[in-house]
Structures are given as structure tokens and as C-alpha cells.
Length: 312
Image 1 (cartoon, rainbow, N blue to C red):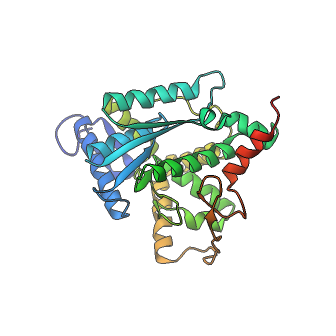
Image 2 (spheres, rainbow, N blue to C red):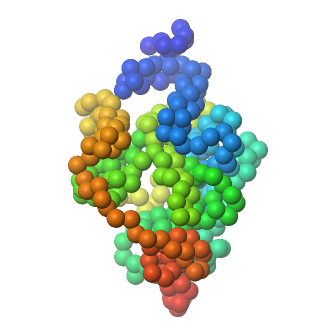
Image 3 (tube, one colour):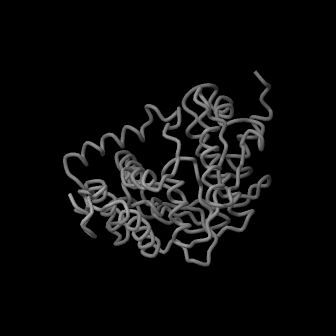
């Protein structure tokens, strides 16, 4: 099969787009499409400072690479979570994030959760959940808190994450199965800033995971291949596998599912409760971040509980 733009042999065939491209034109197409999505959803302007949350994985490093290629002011943020589980996961992911930053002369903020707060994510999960369940909820809480803190403290206008179409479709699928109205209504390529919360954007939300993998490989971006050790058996993996089966039977199903949702939301045709009340926010007395709880935010309460728990 030949590239649509030239007579060279195609390096990738995207059935859902009815498009085949060679390496050169594919590496042009991805940034062009990203720029189109940024403009379409009003994510940010060339004059705004962008903080990219990088994990050492293909999506976040590719996003950082794309934004820099497009000329945006983009710095990185790596959160050291202390997740090893026998494979040095956090150590290796940080090494690759730093390697990418160094090779491209980019600025990378590094926050080590254990050094900053005295406990790794697995340790905080042990204390919070008394040894039961995965640390995913604790991890998510910590990442949201720290990403917003760094964006605020260093004056960034927007926080960008590398969520791809597979990620977004899986979240939407799970929330639709449970008919979680509040979460369905909040899902969007852009979450506006409000009450001390940074604007959050997902410029890769319309790219398949396969497309981002191809981009990273063709660009020569070295990334961590291992999934988080705690992700095995998670609901998100199950939802992705179910959607993969649907995609195999009907090419483009994930994209149709996600884009149809965005269109229905935009036009007001979602069959969910639209008057979900928003909690009144106030500043946490410890960290200053917005919280809906009556005193300290959930993150600071977790850290306080860990500080009061005797070492095992």
C-alpha cells in the first residue's frame, strides 16, 4: 500500500480514517491534527505557558514532543510515585522522562512524593486502605493534587495530559455502564480553570493508542513499555479490551463512540441529569488548594493520617 501523499510505501494504515501514510508524512500528520484539535476545542494559545504531565510513557512524551514541534512553550512535570514492585517502575520511568528532557534541552520539574511527604504511593495506600485494594485511588488523588500545585506555584496557564482516545473511550464506557451522570458530564477535552484549579486539556484525545505508539517509535522516542504494576486486572483494562473487540468488528467504533458523545453533550442531548449541583469550594488551610470538604482537602487529610500512623 502506498502513502496517500506520495508514491512511497506506507508505514501505517489507519482503517478508521481510510488513510495510509509513509513515515515522513505520518510524522507531519500527527502534529497537524493535534494543532487542529487544540484550535477546535480552544485548549490554549501560543502565548500561554503549558505544563505537560509526563510519566515516561509513549503518550505523554509524544505529547511533549508534538507541542514543542508546534512551537508552544511547554515544560514537563514528572511525579515520582515510589512504585517499584520488583521492576523499578518509577525509577525507570523517571530516567526516560529526564533523558527526553535532556536530549531536547527542555525543562522538567520532578516531584518525589516520598521525599516531599514522607511516604510513597504504595505506603500511603497501605495506611489509607489498611492493606486492602490497589493504590490507584490514592495515586490519582496525589497526582491531581501535585499537578495542580506545580501549575499554580510556577505560573502555568494550562496543564496538559497525554490521554489518548482509548483512555477516553474506556472512561466514558465505564461511566456509561454505571450511568455516573456527574462524571459523564465532566468528561471533556478541556476542563476550564476555576476556583484555583488549573485548566486541564487532552490534546491527544482523538488519537488511537496504536497511532501514538507508531508516532513514538517513528520519532525515536524511548519510553517505558511496562504498564504500572498495579494496573493488571483493573476495570480500565477490562473496558479497553471490550472496546478493542468492538473496534475489531467495526473499524472506527471507538472514535464514533467518543465523538458522538462530545456532539451530544455540546447540543444538550445527553440523557443524564443536567442539574448536578457543584459543591462550594474553599481553600484548604494547609496547602491552599480548593476543596469541597469542610476543613482540609482529601490529600492533606491523607498525609496527616500517614504522619500520625506509627511505622509498622
